[in-house]
Amino acid sequence: MSLIEDLVLSYRILASHGVVDAYGHISVRSDRDPNRYFISRSLAPELVTEDDIMEFDLDSNPIDQRGRSMYLERYIHGEIYKVRLDVHSVVHNHSPSVIPFGVTTVPLRPLFNTAAFVGEGIPTYEIRDFQESGDVIIKTPHLGASLAKIVAGHPAALMRGHGSVVVGGSIPAAVIRSIYLELSAKLQAQAMLIAGPGGAITYYDDAEVAATTARQESARTWERTWELWRSKAKAELAAEARLGRGERSENQSRILQLWQRAAAACGCGRRH
Ligand SMILES: [Zn+2]
Image 1 (spheres, rainbow, N blue to C red):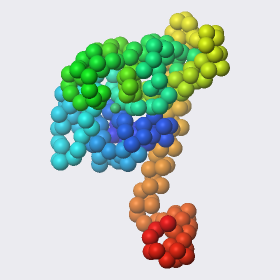
Image 2: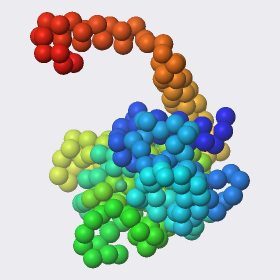
Image 3: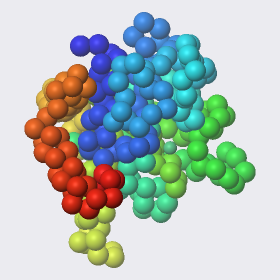
Image 4: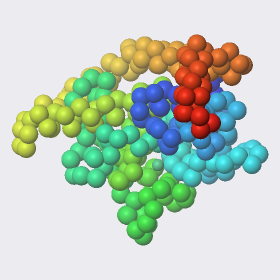
């Protein structure tokens, strides 16, 4: 098990939970040099392999670019690592259920155990406070630093009209928080719909947040979750590697036969 392998697997895990699609990324602070971090080259998360991982300094300059394209928003990662020494992994995503809470004045609140960390506060980053109106992408060190300032000591921050950034002391922590932040937003929206305007919803109080997060931390409850998701992602990668060596699966052969039959019936010569 290596840091880079876990980073590659984490791209798969986030994609399989709908937290990232063709966009979004995760990084990890280097275990050899705390002033560097690893992140994929600019690529859709489900396509990331170990060969795609690049190393950056905390100003988000590549150590060994070799012509590879880079994520425009890599400054999110470098600038957070500069000011949060406890953070070893950063996720930036546009997960759908979270976005409505970034564009309204309704705060995200803690309502179930695996997302109790929401009770530690999830501020919203308003990019208009840091630049003239325009693109919402974090494409400069200045914008990355301003986002890091809003994240401050929190586990995550919403980015108005864009998505969110989630941090953790490890890859599993950042991945698990990202997935449960998305679920928490979805469940809160459902609870608000059921309760109706002005209806009562019982959220966790501060004592429940503190007790739940402390127990999860001390009992390392996240290890079970990480083990499950990691083994699934690893099996998926291994299956892809086998197919890559020319072992076509039964399903793929069947699909190919169907295409060939459809093309023969139509006669246009295109793949159907
Ligand atoms: Zn983005």
